[in-house]
Length: 204
Image (cartoon, rainbow, N blue to C red; front, top):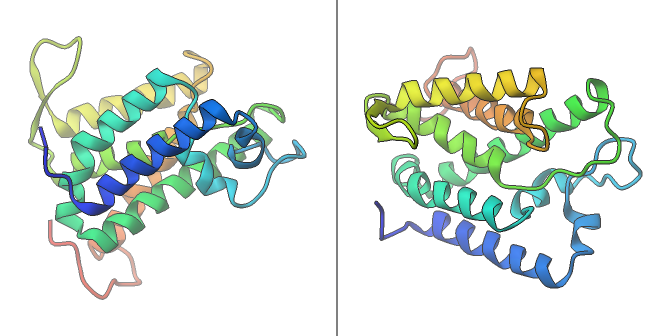
């Protein structure tokens, strides 16, 4: 368990907590900064980022911040502060964009706003599974340690199944998948897997 968090992870934790506390005393912030569906009349472009610093309650923020605390520091040390920041926000933005597409064209939902860092957090989980595939994790209620790649793959399949079937409503399953998708594409780019090559490859 990390105790010495690197700067970007630490600042993201602080920013999320501060914004959540502001939400408690200023509920009207949701109108401006939550991610409203296209066609709702409330959507603004900045919401694809700002929604990722808002949360829907104590369990929501505690779960997300615990995951950021557990995985963010390790990924930041591996990627470096600059690339970690890019990675985090790419995952957040792709999560928001996929959520907007699904709400607009598949669920036909024009009234439900989305909040939460979960899209970026799922991107971090994806990165951990790709970078440290054999690292063992103990996940409640499974009583044995499982490899990170298996945990991440299983979690992605669960999110996809839940999103398609409508199981566990009220959760932005496709935002979670969007965060993982954005993270996967960016990591593969950094690994030199696409025709356009990065200046420096991610050698892992």
